Length: 322
Image 1 (tube, rainbow, N blue to C red):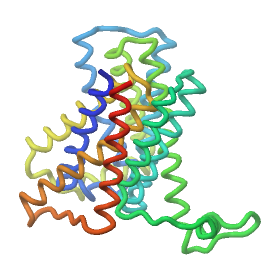
Image 2 (image 1 turned 60 degrees about the vertical axis):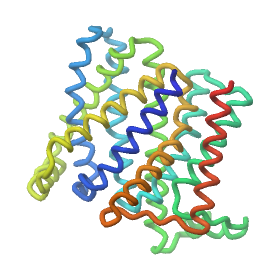
Image 3 (image 1 turned 180 degrees about the vertical axis):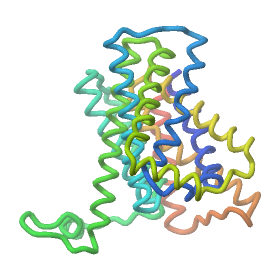
Image 4 (image 1 turned 90 degrees about the vertical axis):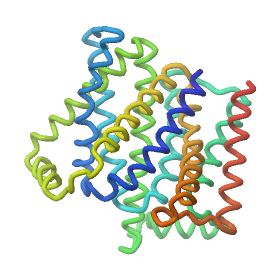
């Protein structure tokens, strides 16, 4: 069941990302502001407790609040990385590192391991996700890779050229975001093993909301949020906007539900399916509305994405036939 839930979550998320391209792109230019407006909606999750009322102990509440606060910090670094560069550079880095970090963290703290067939599926899903999410992959020989690393991070005792400093910041912020995402997923998996799913989910969202309120106590951040409100144009189609945000919330709940049932490392490695769904949606819309959205796939890029798709499909097949 966890596989179906994860795939449904990634399918809905792909639709949300496509809608956000039209509704929310370039509306927020601060990672703090973005995290604030995402987290402020967390309070509405308390309505879900109607279906399964549950009150945690002080220890359980502490873990829940910390998980929610950790997710808020993760969003800050995630958006900071996105703001520094194109999504096509950030998403593959973070998307590849999250399942890798999750694999090691879940092994250390949850004692979760993968069988031989699951490991092969895990690798196929990650490599396929990278191939399908980047515009074009260039394969460098070892010497060129070595020189690129030196250029970006500098020699052992030397400094780096100013031209490569933004790239280093991008890699660092993307790596931190990936590690924090993985840490959150492993922590929330632990919470779901000791608490009811609805209760653990809702009370962890409270930690996110409290973190958002703490942002307002910092004058500099509060000023940024107020300025973003003044400079932001109101959403023209409010019902559609609310539908997109509700869809995003449903996708997040489904992903957490899948995590509560399955192996968290495998679920994160399925991120590549989201890129397939996103690609299919964009191709459909570009054919239906060519004047609004265009997606050109030719030559090497098309071959690369087809190869990535094949690897993801193979990984899914291996998981479904275990």
